[in-house]
Structure formats: C-alpha cells, structure tokens
Image (cartoon, rainbow, N blue to C red; front, side):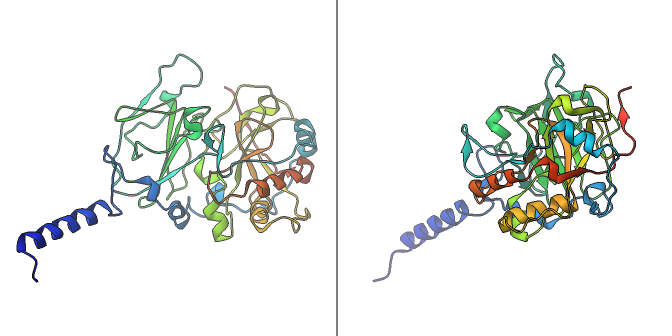
Length: 331
C-alpha cells in the first residue's frame, strides 16, 4: 500500500531536521561552535612559530651557566618534578591549563579589562579585542586561581590568551590579554607582560597529550618556582619581570633548566620518556611564580595520573642551568 504524499512529505521534513541538528557545524544558543566536538589534535598539525624561533631551538649542546650550581642549590637540589596536569578533576576542576581550537569562522567577541585597582591588572600592556574565543571556552580552574583562557586559531596560525578571566555578557573580562602570530618570529613589546608573568606565550610551552600520541614534544616546557628564588629580571625570549631580589643565585624569567644528558630515563613509561626527552633537548623554561618545579600541561582524559606521579623521581640535582647571557633588569 502506498503512503499518502502528505505522509512522505512529513517524513522527508523530519529527516532534514534531524540531519541539520546532528551536523558537525552545530552551535549553542550564543552562536558558538560546539567546542565539545573540536579535535584538539588539530593544534599539533600547525607550525608553532618558525623553526628559528627561540622556543623551537635545540639546546642539547648549549653551554652551562657559570652560576648553575649556585642557582640549583638555592632552589633546592632535592626538589622534584611535579606534573601540574592530568586527567579527571582536582577540587572540582580539570587538572592543568585548558585550551580550545577554533577556525576562521569562529565569531569574535569583545574583551574588557579590569579596573587598575591592584597590581595584577595589565590592560595597558594588553592586546585589545575582539578575539575569536567561544563564550563556552573552558576557564582554568573554573574561574579560580589564574583563570587562563586559551584559543588556537589553526586556520590562521594565531594564538589568543587571557589571564584572570571571567565570561561576562557577550565577551570576556580579563586582567591581561596577548595575541601571538604563530607564523612569525615575534615577541611581546619589551617590558610587557602577556597572559603569563614572563611575557611568554603559554600554549606552546604546555605538555599536551596529543603530542604524546605523536611521539614527540618539540618545545621547552613551562615551569614555576617560588618568588624568592626568581631574579628581578628576564632573558630573551621572556619580556617581563617580577619584583624581587637580584643575585647570582637567582633564576630570571626565561631561564632554562636542561635535564642532564646522562640521566637514565629507560625505567620510565613511554609517555614519561617523551616528556623527559623534551627536557634534555629543549629544557624547562621559567614562566611564572608558583610551586617549585611544577611543570605545566593541559588537562586530558587520557593522562594516567599514577604514571605522571612517577616523574617525581626526577630531582633538581639531575638538571643544569643553560647559560643565561644578558639579563634585563628593572628600570
């Protein structure tokens, strides 16, 4: 028995509606692409700065700084690595600094800056919006702590980063904002911060699980130490300093630690070996004030937290400070 034409038409219209609702181009009520379906691995398929950018330079054979022993002793030779990233939640928030991947059709939203009523507001040292960041982009710590927001535009090779962020109205409010063109060798203006204290980009220094899946981390890894161990100054490619003391025993922003070439990593998992090989080839780069020897990565459900804790076997005595060169200090 043939179905009536009206019934066939109804089935056709319902099918079109279902297909439309299930499209990969779905968006929320605010007109933002559905970031839950974004492939974060797309960010690993673009070049993060040209090959001659300092963040892409192999430091395996770089000379050791004359004050290396002094600096390491001051931090504490028995300080161990701590992976400040992982899977699941810690105190209700994903572990690490999250990011989103966007493309050319991501709508741009306004960025406003907090009033300069305390020292951590840097609207005058910030790039001005609007930025192509989805309004439902994850905020580090769910808005507690540094509250970074990061968006990587993989079609245009642009990086957008915010610090101390809240999603407000049709955009974001932040204490600082920085834009990096990943296609060029460029830096923040001298003396300017970024979304990080050192004036460095955050995303290219994160340990990201899609890198593990590719089998290589090809950049320095962001790390922190406490303020009283940081020199009041910075070295290239950092651009910003933190108030503090000066002395040969202190490490400036932008300073690098390199895992010693003869440190045996064969007993670690393949994931941790990838991380440790990067420390031998590209090192750790001091980017912010924080807990001693915390290395920073992005949250991902594929991290094995128990395995990452094995990195705590690596002590500061297994590192050396790469030659610092000229330190830019306070004016």
